[in-house]
Amino acid sequence: MKFLYYLIVLILLAPIFSNAQGTYKRGYIVGLKGDTLKGFIEYKKWEKNPDSINFKKELHNSPVQTFTVFTAKEFAIKGADTYRRYIINISQDHVDKAKLKTGIDTNFIAQNVFLQILTTGNNVTLFSYTDSIKTRYYVSESMYEEPRELAYRVYYQGKTIGGIQTDTTYRNQFRYLALKYKPIVDTAKAKAAAAAAIAAAAAANQVSVSKAVKRKSKTTYRVKPLSKSAIAKIKNQRVAAERDSVANADTLATMIAKSKYVRIDLVKIAKAINGDTKEKFDTVRHWWFAGVAVNDNVLALNGPAKFPNSSSIFPKISFGYSAFLNKKTERMVFRTELSLTANKYTFPDVKDTSGAINSLSKIRQYTFSVAPQLIYNVYNTIEFKAYINIGVSANLSAYNKYTFTRTSSDTTTVKDKYPKLSAFWFNIPIKAGVVIDNHYEFYLGYAFPATLTSGSPGYTGKLKQYELGFNYFFGFN
Image (cartoon, rainbow, N blue to C red; front, side, top):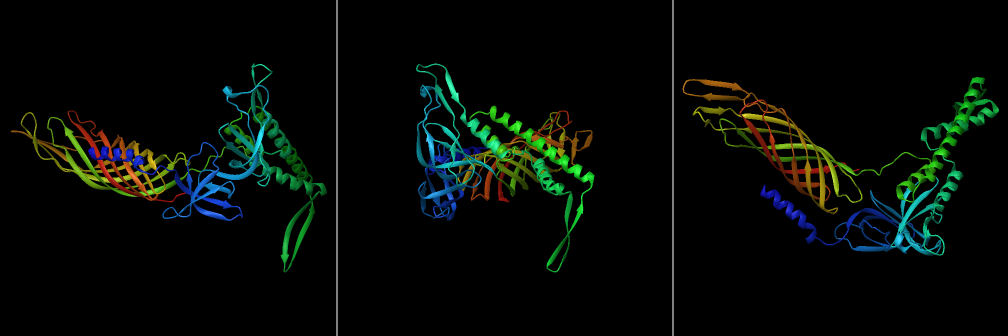
């Protein structure tokens, strides 16, 4: 296992010898004239909203360009964040209890900044802005409108320090938007309401209009009176749509009243105002892979006859799926791997404690495995990643008809498929490897010894595995 330990040590030391910089990720920048530049943006996992960013047209051999709030309108990192430039009013009051003032502090400054877009829709867009003072949230009803800060203040009341008070004006701002747009917060109900509204126009005239036949350049229509049952159905649809609208307004009002000034609550409210209450998670960045490896399986059989360990070197083919658990940091990866391999074990004849000669014919093992794994990228850039990996492998094995023969001075005993080897067994594999240019993976692996005997009194079988492999990634989302 020394080779594995050495590789892990090198991977852990890799960041020390690398350049201290952020990771360049695919993205785009919109210039002041509306021109869009596609390339790579240095993503630094900002705790505060950035006021400048570094950009490369190509990942390699390309000069670094710096864009600021005065030279770019918008930028986005693929699969992560989008920022848009605005001139906004920024409140200056603190929410940290150690820095609170007496009375409401309404001071603000006007500044040109990059706001992070949290969610957007037909009615409103929600932004966030964080600096050294606090995190603030902003809302606008159009991308061309200056976002307004959702007001939230914490302060001491009175001339002397007393109880802490909170100003939740942001709730009233959301209530105004909810009343203005009166969203129906369910897609199916929204479609039903739209259909009812269209039908209502026809119901008012008690006629139904349908397209008939198009002849040459003319289109004719057929108009016929609606039946009483059709009119009644349309009226019921309108009543149901109005009832749903009231119910949704009540739900949204409750959501606003119970909200806290935190991202998760405000995003839910903004989505509801846009007519969507379903939880939508960011698209997980995922991909598929196929690979080949060379396995060295070492089988140890111990019992009355102590056979020497048998090593079997054989190729393995694999196919699987990987996904980043957090596509912004791209540190943790969940992987599921399916693999197929075969092995052949040979053992020399040995004597047991009584002096009898014990022999085993060749054992052939065919194994299909399913292995969920968790990967941590110790070093992580677009062009190079180094990782460590641990998983659990569920293995289904089939064997040939091998035989065990025991020959003493007066008797010979032959047993089929003895010692009995398990058809279903588990082991724990670990790996360390590197990924180059997001497509080529090279790794070393080791699987801790797993018990492989079943129902053979006196014998224990242990199987450990070494692996050297290559995977190719494809099908990125």
